[in-house]
Length: 113
Length: 113
Image 1: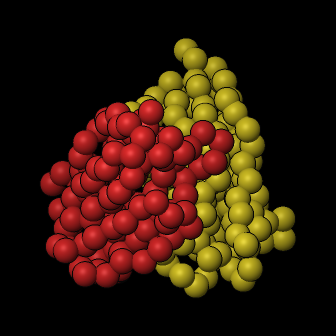
Image 2: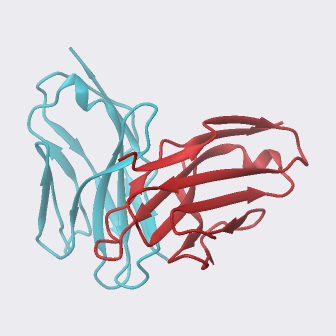
């Protein structure tokens, strides 16, 4: 039981490049989330999903897209990276029975030059 | 909107010292309150939670009491260990909208032998 895994762990991009962050969970959770963590700002919700095939905007969705084609996977895309997207990205999941308890992945550190 | 305010860190304590990390919140209605912990290089883990006024959440020797009258949820531990060194996040979820968890900025705790 791996819990929530994220790929890659580190990435450096140049401005304008694109990339996709992959989140996978093996707990059969319905809900999945993408957060970004910036110094002095805590975690902010980017997008979330309440089930396979569904996505919704969170607090800071601009510049990001997401997809949830399979229940266990939640992808976060950056179409044209900007330096302001330099951050640590965390994926989380929770079950429908206990959606208060979110399980987090180890994070992806992204630097945009 | 909802907000969470935590005491700024870093907090440095000697082993076996008493710990308090202050957290106050602003929210409409009756939110659920949480403490998450982030160990170095890892994602966040739920430490404890309380869902209604006067509830006390507890786990691993940590405690926090939901105080509606003072809108607070301070984290305490009677005797800290070096292994408690981490970043602690206070968070709330409003009574509606399971997907929206508002996090504080985090408080770094360093425990020295």
